[in-house]
Structures are given as structure tokens and as C-alpha cells.
Length: 492
Image (cartoon, rainbow, N blue to C red; front, top):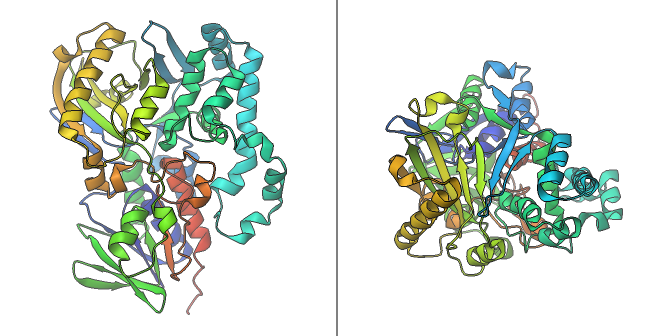
């Protein structure tokens, strides 16, 4: 049986291991950390449980289809429930809005709250769906770097209707074409952060992102976000995938322009297929040091990172739900600070995720576990010690103003994760959450392919390569890799 080696046990690596195992490979996953999941990890501290990484779960079918590959009933391994409230939004002037998961209710509520014609909102959502339907086959489910992709009927149809994609407009300008109310524009501009980009730079095609959230819904996995990676890890083990933790890969062994294995802890591991789930930048710079590297691709602007405060809160806040946003008064200034000045904005937009709203055991009775995040630039050598101190004061002040509280009184424990920590624990270059940013209409085409054009039998999955970052796209990258990898010949 041919052997496939996967470097990294992030969500993309776990999904790839399951798909290659099903395809007929013997699969070994080498992971530098002592746990699976990559960014999808968790900690427990002073009676609170915190998901460390991604906090939004949508398109659950991309997870459950991995169990279906083996004709297994996914609820045996993995369970989740749909949220009726997608997100709560708060503004400094006291305006509040809750996004309902029901589309018709959302249109009605948004029309009343923001004084926008319901038909305008409906038209916007319809166009977003059209964008998704036109591009899903090309941009998300197949390799952009194979000629066969462009010869399909669906791709030709998409190219003929390219004007509908708003590639020459920014997300912000598209949203302003539809809406007069700056608050509703800001709400839809926020979706640029789902791939670590700026709404004032990323192309208007990104307005299809709210379609993914509103059409497919948002969910909460039983046991928290970490349960996604844990369930796939346990399932992969059951299906015969071998995991070696604490095994950093020092080198991908290349002979005659073909990947034939890896070197880990001084030991050579032979393989017929090598898949890197590691960020593509350190993959080339550290594991392929003697090989030519794609200069233009590696020099792409990195996506935003994050500064996260994990707080145990000795009080319950009924006005908050699982997902909550406290908006800045000046979104343009915030993104200018992040991408142009490479610093934190003084009045940042704050995201608060509270899993104890769904999983009560994540916090002591009467308490809540707050995941408090602001967007941050990548790690470019800034004084993060100083930036964190200032950011904490600004965050506390903003929470106090908007929620009419004194949050410092209720913080019982604290853990902090900054871009430096994200970079060191996940090997994400500069601590970028989504690999390259999408602040350019050609970004998708410059993003690294899921295969090497110069080294045979070398493949790439995860958030730093096509089709992009975030759980759904990482899972899709695994599917693309599986489609690209040749099916083993029996008894060969």
C-alpha cells in the first residue's frame, strides 16, 4: 500500500488524512505540537474552558461529509446545533441589532432597524447568492491552477457573466451601492475580516461571504469548536491513520524533482506522497531551503492577525449571545491602521465570543467565558508588550461604555494570545490567520496552488493555499488535494 505523509495536524491536514486513507493510502501525520487541530485548539484555566482559535462554525456539511465517506453516521462522533441568532451588533450611540438566521426575518428586522427598503436588502442577498453560484465551482471546489478547470461549462458561464462579480469594485463600494445607512454598510463590510482583508481594498466579489453565513446558517458544535478537530482526529485514528506528535519536520526530501519523504528528528520517513498542511511560507523557507520558491506568491500581503484576551467573567450578561460585535465609530481608520500603518487602532471593533451561552460547563455557574478579540496586523517586529497594554485599556473602556458596566470588576482569570504567539504555535507566517490577504482582485489566482508545479508528488492544503483560510475553505483544500492525488493502483 503506497504511503502518504501529511505535515501538520491542522483541520486541513486531518481532513486530507481521512480522504487519502479512504483513497487507499497508508497515511502518517507528523505534527510538531503535542495535540491535533492546529489553530483549532483549546485550554482550560481556573474552571473556564476557552477555544483558542476559530470561533465561527458554518457549512457543517463539509465536516460531516468526511464521516459519510466511510458510510458512518456522523452524530456518533460529532454533534452540533443551529443558532437562531447569528450575531448581535452594538454601536456607540446605543443602536443594537440582532441578525436572525431566518432570511425573511432578517430582511424585515434590518429594514426596520436601518430604515432601508426590504426589496433593496432582498436584492443584495440575491446578488450575493448569484456570485456564489457562479464562482463556487471555479474558486472553491477545484484547482485554479489546472487547465481542465477553465474548460468546464460552469467556468465558461461564470466568465460570460463576470460583470456580476464586482471584481473592479471594493466590497465597501458595492455595499454603498445598495444601502444608504452607514451602519448596515458597516455590518456587511465586516465580512471582509472573514478572510483577513480590508473592505476598502478587497474586491466586491467578497459580498458572497454573507451568503455562506446566511444561507447555510451558523452552528455550535457540542463541546465547543475544539470538538471539530478532536472528532476528526479520533475518527482518523479509528480508520487507520497514524499520528506522530512532537515530530517537527526539518526537511522535505526531494530527489530528481520528486518528493520522496521527509526528515523528522533526524530520521528519514519515506513516502510516495507528501502533503504540507504547514503554512506555505515556512514550508518553502524551512522545509524546502534548497529548492526554488515562488517569489511572487510568498511576497503576497499577509492577512490580518488577532489579539485575543480570554477572560473568565464572574457575571452573566443576558444582552450578549454566542457571537457579539462592538463596532468602532471609524471603520476606515481601523483598517488603515491595520494594513497601512501595521498597528492597532485606538478604538477597535471588538468581537466577543461566549461559548458558555451554549455549553454551560465551559464556565462556573453564574459566570461566562469571554473570548475577546480585535483585529491586529501581522507580526512585523512591533512592540507587542506595549501594544497589548494599550489595547487592553481601550477594549475595557469600550466594553464599559457600550454595555454600561465596569468589566474589570468581573475578570477572574486572563490568558492572552497575540500575533507573535499565533506565529510560534501554528507556524503561520507573521501570525496571519488566513495566509495571504485578499486585498486585490487577483489575490485568488496568486495564492499558492494545492500542488507543486516543480516537485512531483508534493501537495499543499490548509489556510495559506487555495482556496483560502477559515474552516470551510481549509476543508475544501483537502478535497481538492484528494482529487489531485492519483488513486493507487492495486497490487502495484
